[in-house]
Image (cartoon, rainbow over all chains, first blue to last red; front, side, top):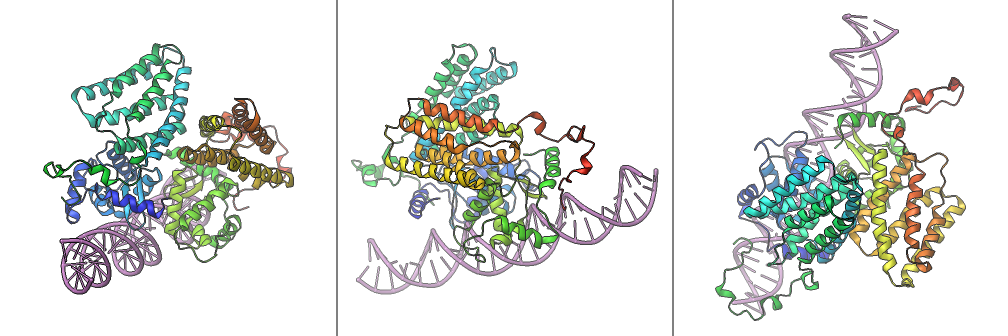
Amino acid sequence: MHGQGAATAFVRWSVLCTIRGEGLNSSYAIMKTVLSAPRRAVRGRGEGAEARIVRSIGEAIADRRLPPGTKLAEESLAEVFGVSRERVRKVLLLLAQRRVVTLIPNRGAFVAKPTAREAREVFEARRVIERAVVEALEREPRPLPDEMSAKLRVHLAREEEADRVGDRMALIRLSGQFHQLLADFAGNATLAGILADLIDRSSLAIAAFERRSSHSCSATEHRRFVEALESGPPGAAMRLMMEHLDEVERQLDLDARSDGAVDLKSVFADRPADRTEEPVRTAGG
Amino acid sequence: MHGQGAATAFVRWSVLCTIRGEGLNSSYAIMKTVLSAPRRAVRGRGEGAEARIVRSIGEAIADRRLPPGTKLAEESLAEVFGVSRERVRKVLLLLAQRRVVTLIPNRGAFVAKPTAREAREVFEARRVIERAVVEALEREPRPLPDEMSAKLRVHLAREEEADRVGDRMALIRLSGQFHQLLADFAGNATLAGILADLIDRSSLAIAAFERRSSHSCSATEHRRFVEALESGPPGAAMRLMMEHLDEVERQLDLDARSDGAVDLKSVFADRPADRTEEPVRTAGG
DNA sequence: TTCTCCGATTTTGTGCACAATCCGCAGGGC
DNA sequence: GCCCTGCGGATTGTGCACAAAATCGGAGAA
């Protein structure tokens, strides 16, 4: 899928972000810290072992504990999850199919770094699908079913709590889960599954292109959406959702220059005092 | 993903459709007939071997040369494509991720047989995505770019030729490719990729639920759509596309009784003379 | 000092062999 | 006569060992 040139450029970039250490032990230690430990440390066998690993890695990527470009070494992951390397390989193949990781032949697996174009496409796809989701929800008779209403209320409370205490990681995860929740309510499991992938990829795009200064309050927008859905005029919820998605995308830096190779000259232009600042952490540092 | 009960019911059903023979040789011979041979018979290694096998099996399923429920034995496929069993296993995992085949633990891979609910969901998802595709195409300034117009014209000619000579298999494949072509023109590769999967799954749904009497002429509807897109009033193309998708779905038998287990009593009720008719072909017959 | 080449080491890719599981069938018990 | 249980054959699942490829480090030359 990737051309050779693209792959090379990708790897060159990824070196700067790769978590590495001297040999396996160090890498293992970091991985163990980043990835949430499985239920029992040693036991890795069992029926849903693969699903568990997929979820674990997927969540770590969605939470941005594993930033785009991070190398996912098979051996390290195998040790972290207490399974054989073959099983990890299978999991990586699955995640690659979902475009969450990128497999480069003879080079290994990396957390995917979407291009700006791909990021735009993902958000466009989300708008397409979530428009249908909201249409379905607005067709529901109001008041909404108690179960739905209650779950939304609980979710909003959790988002606002995370926002209040400043738990950014939880906020990111909950924000994605909110959209997932709506899709589940819409009653089309196929569409919901497609959206689940797109949400994960959105998370990657945000991690890759987020502006330094950006700070959205998804919780507020989500609450307004739910209020419009429950008691607003027809079409209000739809408008809020579209604006919300636009707003999330607008907070990214998807200029052309962000795509592809970085122009080092422009990056370091007019900054002669760089030496005195905190050094950028590089591989092995 | 599948519950145990569902898996068992599925397998019981699939037995009726499974291509089987005594031992490997017979199965191999049938597979070799069904699947288009790779470029060179023996050689299976190489860079894009997996992609080639995925495409080959995927096309065979889309063309309905491999009907839903067909067992895809690893050994047979390995021999057909001249690769090792591990590679086939990898391919099957990929196809399972795309919901085109169903993997049942310790039982093997089968061409997926969607449920009626899933079939409805797939068509709903297609409507959602293709609506966006047509919206994008209708936003294009007219006349359409020469390249697009020419490709559409060539494609329509091929569809009509296939219809004329009665090449049903080619017609099925071309019908799917038409929608794929439109999505490619819309310029969102991500959405086009999602739609590609949905088209494959539509093909499965059609194979599973097609009415005996159904005979649509997609070629005619496709031509009308192109004419509307090129020179019709605004919204005409959209209306034709939505009607087209509705029509395709309407030709399926998605009643509740088609879903899940077949009620044998109702199937054979009031037909005391069954014995004299041609016996139903069962496995091994 | 910097660039290039080359060997050592690490990591990924693949085939193979064995273990686990399941289906079909025959034999025995109820 | 029917059902349950145990056994044989076949197929899938998994670990292991080796092969292939790439990276990293150092040595040597310009």
